Amino acid sequence: MSGHSKWASIKHKKSATDAKRGAAFTKVTREITAAAKDGGGNPETNIRLRAAMARAKDINMPNSNIENAVKKGTGELPGITYENVVFDAYGPGGVALLIEGLTDNRNRTTAEVRNLLNKKNGNLAGAGSTAWMFTAKGFLSIKKDKIGEDELMELALEAGADDVQAENDYFEVTCDPSAFEAVKAAILAKNITAETAEITKIPNSTIKVTGNDAKQLLALMESMEEHEDIQAVHANFDISDEDMEKAAE
Image (cartoon, rainbow, N blue to C red; front, side, top):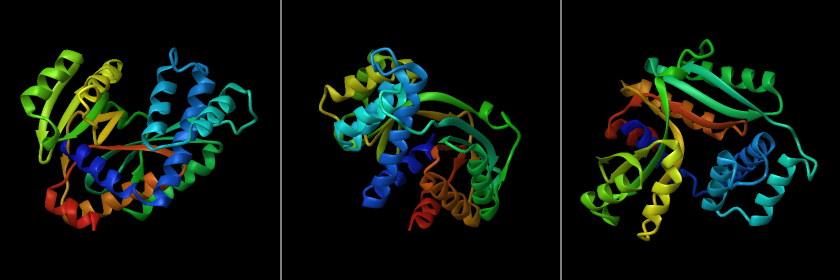
């Protein structure tokens, strides 16, 4: 869990730049369009679409952009058709990676993902070889100065969360994906904004990574995250605060 929250924190800090924001807009637009195509344009009945639209609002995407992305998915506006892709891979230090994306050209994306892995001492693995190491969970990280642990524990568990853990400067709340919106709403009702709030894949166990392997791994994950076809990268690493800070410089 600690590796997940540390990486989420790094992403949050880096996303402030205009370039990162533009990439975030591209990724969430694709997700909205794909979700609307697969499950319809009504967020009340399409959980995936509802989550994607919430992400769009979190990064201040204009409502007109969101509406157009939905209409492209439902066919009301012309647009590119994207397919879901999942890559199982291993990175430096033997870390398991689960890479999720949306692409209009599977062969191109596969070749580019393989190239990114090869440059950072990683490799593609057989389908399903790492997916079993992760579990879908709702995840929220909240700064400790915003609420006390006992109060957050009571609030989150009552709303349907599975667990609340303290990790450095943050509290980490995990829940079943079906309870994510209720838990997020309960926290927001207290005027508390989560630093990270997403439905993601949490590793069932972690691998300790140090030194150059840690540096290469985080560089690999960042290059993956920057690729416009890749929506998310999940990894089962555990890196010390010191190595994490060095790699993030």
